[in-house]
Length: 394
Ligand code: GLA
Image 1 (cartoon, protein in one colour):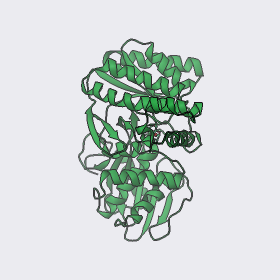
Image 2 (cartoon, rainbow, N blue to C red; image 1 turned 90 degrees about the vertical axis):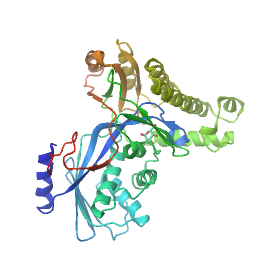
Image 3 (cartoon, protein in one colour; image 1 turned 60 degrees about the vertical axis):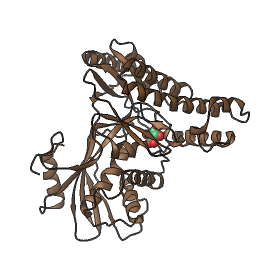
Image 4 (tube, rainbow, N blue to C red; image 1 turned 120 degrees about the vertical axis):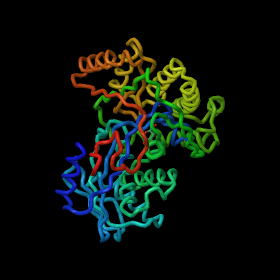
């Protein structure tokens, strides 16, 4: 929704009064380092231009009322009640975040919030993490406490909201990149130590395409959780705290591993190494090497981790058959969602057209494709900021 329209909608919903503040929280794609975060490994995501914008105004009571332009039913709760999961389902991410802030003893005030998202849901682009972070920032903006919770702690609080209120045992990647992303950079995150490095990702000769297969999955449907527990059980059998400490030699020696566990270990150990190599390749501007690592990551997710699907494989294969493509892979949890393609800028239009045509010919529905640069992480939208959807004097 355009900015002026959104402000009008806010006033229709909540009445005229003091102008709202605005915060934004972006979606993400992961360049490489998939299913490594909950194994204490490395990830290399970027924040994308698609985002959730939240307009927020404090109330002088303890009620929180959250409307979304995409939902009929609003979310309502009192900051004084004991927060527990309740309908509508999307509101659980918001309730979980409010509960986490309360538990930390953060100052909170009632708030009226209107959310508007350009991140397609279920596309593997982290719309849930963006919803959590947008809610956290909106509540903090209302209370005048923005920026007071350190980034890493806020990411963990949002992750916990998803574990406890939405039943999805996700890792720390999505919330971290949403909060810590920097424009023009990918984020190399060590999920064990929490250390970060911002790696430049802003070469004007390259374009990153995001291809949404429109195959939708829920992250709490079991496939994700089973991968996580297979990794944990493999680590326990090898006597290491996590697969970050595992090696392929250890796996070869460990007779108790099942075939499936062996495959999971092979993926995770390989992917952690690929992520570090890919970060170094990016830093050196070696896009050929970077692209090869993307493809190796996809194959490993397909063959050893079993989280790809025919639609994602098709996008990757048609991309790799085109001129100017450095690499392609599924991104995010998998089982559907999106694939990314790194392509030379002068070939981007042709590659987009070829992938879209191959896909709809094969499956009979379209594969929407957009390009994105590495966007900034979540934060306050100041009046007059360029590059966002609000008019300069909101
Ligand atoms: C989902 C989770 C992340 C991460 C990825 C796979 O996006 O939310 O924590 O585990 O899957 O890399």
